[in-house]
Length: 154
Image (cartoon, rainbow, N blue to C red; front, side, top):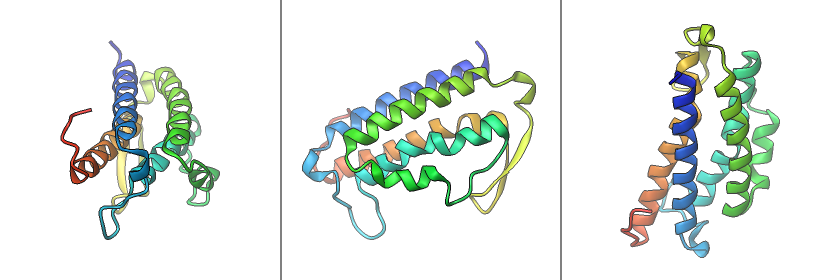
């Protein structure tokens, strides 16, 4: 199995997992924030809805989007978990296609990414960022579920 195929497989599973977890939170609690700067389930899913779109220019043209990229502006348009899931399924399908088609010879190419204080990542690492981001937010949604008294693994 090619590396890209494994990343696609893991990304699709992570999407299914986070959608299932978000759907398990009662609708009236989608906006609930556990405190401080913590984000709601809806806030988590708004990011998931657009994060693949943010990564696409990196995979297709080697261009890091600006903070005012249209993907960020669209984030708040997804104002329900259901809309976020629909958008995430669409954008994840698109990025999985781009990952599957990504050339082997470019996997070791490096890019300087704007987060984490600015880090250099290989394209192989960048291909898995959408998966990583979904798993990260899945943990946050699971924590919200626990705080709401839901101890079932969804």
